[in-house]
Length: 306
Image 1: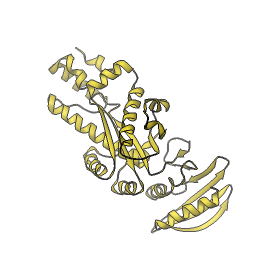
Image 2: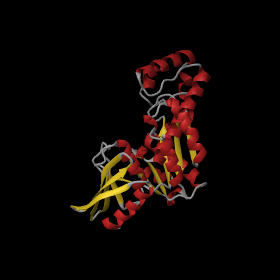
Image 3: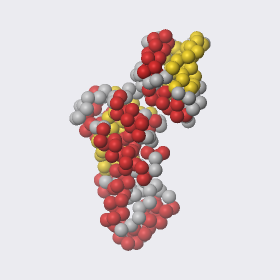
Image 4: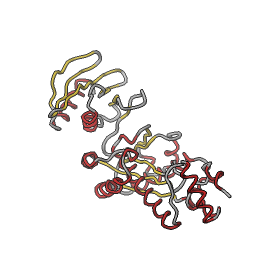
């Protein structure tokens, strides 16, 4: 696909989404044009080089409009399209993915209390639009009070899978593996395999952690046929964002269950409040039960064991 073919392709997508194209012109190594939709507008550029086609959204100043344009165009030419995302903290270009995709994310990795939860969500063209419309985004940007509502919507319209590694199982596995990234890879691989039992999908995307081949090595027969990519800030992809919401929702519910069972508040994260709660727990229940509610390889354990 050259820059002219790409322009025709992108133009068709934009016009089908009620956008108008104006002021098209040739620029060095590419094509520039203006996009208008209602009161919003911005400059869009298509560059062509030996590496292929690159879409540049950086001249669309309105964040909401830029996100909208990215969502409808960036996934249209998989493996031939690379975009420049101005909100990225990295200077590297971001590879985009098709909307028929399995997104995987986890929750609880940095929390002393509670399990490790890995979730996967399969999205397609229709469900991606719905998820964006209802406000699904990286769970770290959403209040816990809204997570449950979004989680119900995701579960209603998307195939999904959730793997929960309880604290007891987590501590057992970690004592053997002694590597959190390998444990994460195992959870990601199980989610992918489980989802592939229900959906036919060629691509999967997860957040970057450790060496990319860790997940690939943990996959079995079905999973090894899928094209798996890892990216920093992968939650910008709607499938990964949806997975982050499901993982967070499950993590919150599991923490709540532990609090009811042990009549103790378990703060999230690994803050001084967490250390205080851990000390209170061991005072009430003794040292032997801490492995049932916490990830004992955290340094906090050394600070609270009586």
